Amino acid sequence: MAEASEKSLNFIEQIIEDDLATGKNNGRVLTRFPPEPNGYLHIGHAKSICLNFGVAQKYGGKTNLRFDDTNPVTEETEYVESIKADVKWLGFDWAEELYASDYFDNLYEFAKKLINKGLAYVDDSTSEEMAAMKGTPTMPGMNSSYRSRSIEENAELFERMKNGEFAEGTRVLRAKIDMASTNMLMRDPVIYRIKFATHHRTGDKWCIYPMYDFAHGQSDSIEEITHSICTLEFVPHRELYDWCIENLEIFPSKQYEFARLSLSYAITSKRKLLQLVNDNYVTGWDDPRMPTISGMRRRGYTPEAIREFCERIGVAKRDNLIDVSLLEFCVREHLNKIATRVMAVLDPLKVIITNYPEGKVEELTTENNPEDHDSGTRIMPFSREIWIEKDDFMENPSKKYFRLAPGLMVRLKSAYIVRCDEVIKNAAGEVIELHCSYIENSKSGQDTSGIPVKGTIHWVSAAQAIEAEIRLYDRLFKVEDPSREDGDFKEYINQDSLQTITAFVEPSLATASLSTPYQFLRKGYYCLDQDSTPEKLVFNRTVGLRDTWAKEAGK
Image 1 (cartoon, rainbow, N blue to C red):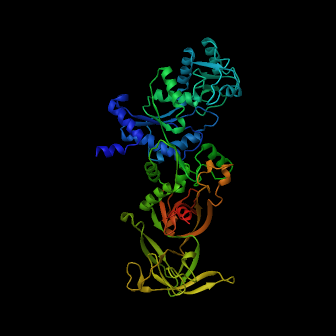
Image 2: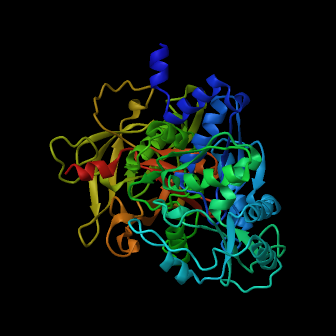
Image 3: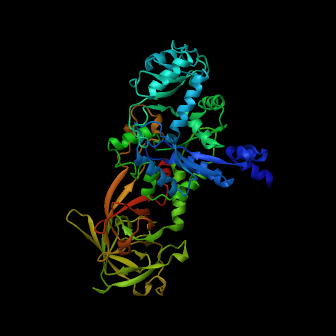
């Protein structure tokens, strides 16, 4: 049993268990989730959230939510609030809410310490000149002519940078490491730059701001983070992370990297997602086609399903593309357990039951969710005129067609067996109405007719039905990995990713809730959209009952 348990650990959990076994960090586990507030969180961030908060919870530790707000040009309070809402919606809470800007004074002192140790210098070179001196992965770089400045001169210039005496782009502070390093990031990286921009928290107090690589490790150290978990693109940054901590002689936080989550038929670059928003390819960051957490929430995905998805894909050391069908499977599996079943006709065809009394309205009882017998029941009105789906009728049916056709019978869900007696067409020969008759003693739950029927279809009573707008969402991109395709990624947008139709839904949905998931029987899972009003209901398709894309791929 112990061996099986050990094999089930991911490599991050194994590192933590080894640390706990040796008494490292005095048995503490403290992780952090450090997003930059320059956009909305996406499914990749959800993976990081689940990992950072999940391992801390598993080992009795805590997680800080720390905003990496070192670039005042791109960061906004709106993004801060959206990130907090997303983390809470996913089911996690943080020990402390912190900001890299909390440490600007500390970071400034750290930079001065490096200067005083002869490990940092002010460089007047332009960005183009520094790039030319950087070298290549196979050729060493060249030392800047400013690298030999004295400690006193560097200290004075850095203070003058802080005081706003120099223009943007005229000077930077660089760490003095090794211009011949095989790791390009160790070739005297820039650790401070001048930016005259108002910060969302510190206002105009600062005109110099630390670079991410300088702020990140030191922020971890200040908080005494025991396990700094980030994605694989930060592997080359680890050497600088360790160099700063070692030379500043501060708490030795350690960085560990895992494979980031890339999802098929989606883009998870915040820069590209921002393009989609700004260029109006989507309605906003919370557009239900977006892979953002707010978009998935609006589409009707549940936090339980997203957590299960992150658990299923595991924690890997190599990047790979995860099939979105797995995410949709997790959503579908959870919604099947909790969704309220209702009837909605998306492509309506009128049916008149000619032998049912005019003006009579019968109240039929049906289950809210057969998967959950504690979910209760609801009343469905039944009358002479109903709506059914057009594709539940075929004038010339195939041998194995078990729905309505001339002379054929079908059961109306929770109601009666009906037989199609007459087909009404318009001048163009299109079917516009069916005349049927019902079998009186065939009522569901009380059927004594003895008539066997193989098909059951859904319906809504025409007089009581509510007209609603239905938004049918599909995948935003036509290709599996749009970020790897040639040309502009926007060329691969699926122009049919949103179709809007008008449907008839059962009257119980007049009191539909934004927090309640629904299964439209035989059609899929849907949720009420925030655009809904009492006068106009709007529903989003969350996911179909089956993976139609897999079916298409198999043809």
